[in-house]
Image (cartoon, rainbow, N blue to C red):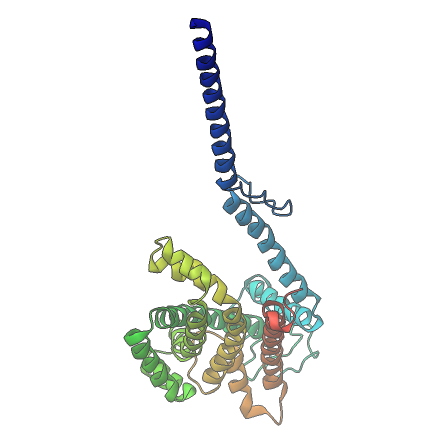
Length: 347
């Protein structure tokens, strides 16, 4: 009796255990079916997905590309024959100005020989002498110093003022932009050369005063150009990223936006130097130049009374002005072609 009762009970227990195991296996299978599948591996052509520092990799790539662009712009500029010719002419003028004190250490305003000797008449004076016996060649190279000094310093001062005003107006906008734009318009409504004459007449005619007066006339053009560049560039993504990183206005203006706005400003600077040289020559021709130095304009003004008998006194410094201004304009055209992507600056 006991054996027959025990056997069915053991079989039932075993069967119950087997059923529970099957149920657990089925539940596990259903859970596996419901579990989300792991994401697929990214394609192999995305090499930076698994990089430890993708941002650093991208930054390094951009840093490698930047010198290539500058090098390409330099090659485009040097391969331009007109720009190379302008650079050669300007190099000759600058070399003569730097060597003026070595070649002609005496005062170019002092009498050096017999008056009105024509070019080639006396080996001591290859370009002749003027009505007061002053060496024309000495005055020419010393005049190159004054003309280039006034042109460069006036352009530098005008660029600084124009960049500060234009960058402030274009970056901040609003009321600041309105006020500064009105200031620029006020300066541009007054004829530039008349304002220049008034400023020089009020101050004592000297090289620093003439340079500052020319800068006061030249900066509105720079300001308008820089303002337009800043208004366009400040909406770019890299400026928004700089703001998101917490950079201040000074860093965004001078380190983020200004370097990208400089190419057209550089082109304008070369033309501004040429314009400043012409303005200084015009002032000296009218007798508003520095009387203590010799310049190309003053040489032309001195020789205008002798155009019929000694035309070379005005022609020689006039040719020097023409060649210098022409070289600066040729350089400006070459810079525009090299730095402007729309005209072939990018390969």
